[in-house]
Image 1 (cartoon, rainbow, N blue to C red):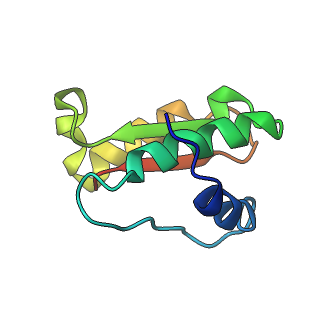
Image 2 (cartoon, rainbow, N blue to C red):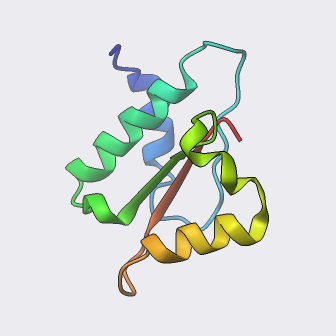
Image 3 (cartoon, rainbow, N blue to C red):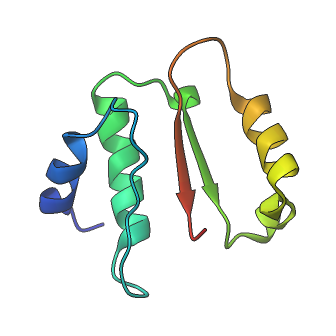
Length: 92
């Protein structure tokens, strides 16, 4: 995996901030890689793995999550305690 420091450094400024961050770009430009690098960065700064909820909407395993209520229930079931959780959605 190619480390994309430019993008990760820009994203790091917003970790912990309440704003929603959206990564956009053309197909096969490395957006999924940046998400995986961001997950690594979060764990390196002390975020526990269970606090990171990653969903890839291109996976057939997540095909049922296209309805708001179903997605809400899925996320709600993964949240443990009152800690901050990070939701990373790939290919929404």
